[in-house]
Amino acid sequence: MAKKRSGAATGAKKSAAKSAPKPGRLRVLVVEARFYDNFADALLSGAMQVLEEAGADVDLVTVPGALEIPAAIAMAVDAAAAKRDPYDGAVALGCVIEGETYHFEVVSNESARGLMDLAVQRKLPLGNGILTVDNEAQAIARLGGAEGHKGADAARAALAMVRIKRELAGK
Image (tube, rainbow, N blue to C red; front, side):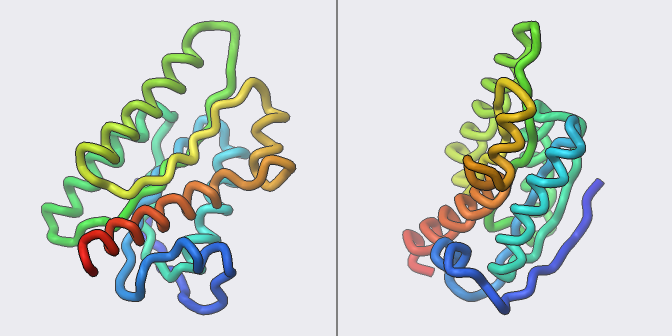
């Protein structure tokens, strides 16, 4: 399901402004995995705060789990390009918690590999906010606790990469 949200350029915090791209239209795709709803809500909240402070127009796509994020980003990027309304960057949000089987490694490694492949092959500014943790306490610590806020960090990373891409292109 895709949803559109518009950001407001006023009241930007210093941290968001530092990584924000140059003025002009900023279109960002956010793909969130809802496997752990409570963590997904917190990741999305942190990312949206940063993107709204940067004045980004945000499209939100929701997928079942972290493995589906790279494919959803690829589909959305292709669809936007076909409509001649490309995304400037993307943010991936999700949480993978280690269990008793090898599935944790597969999901963690393959979602990260898929995102890196997209970023490099398509030259897509991308922030990876997929938590890969041993337990729920570690996830909580990365959602505004002692380890910062990884949803916000992923949005800042995407904005920083958009800025770098624009600077390198002379825009």
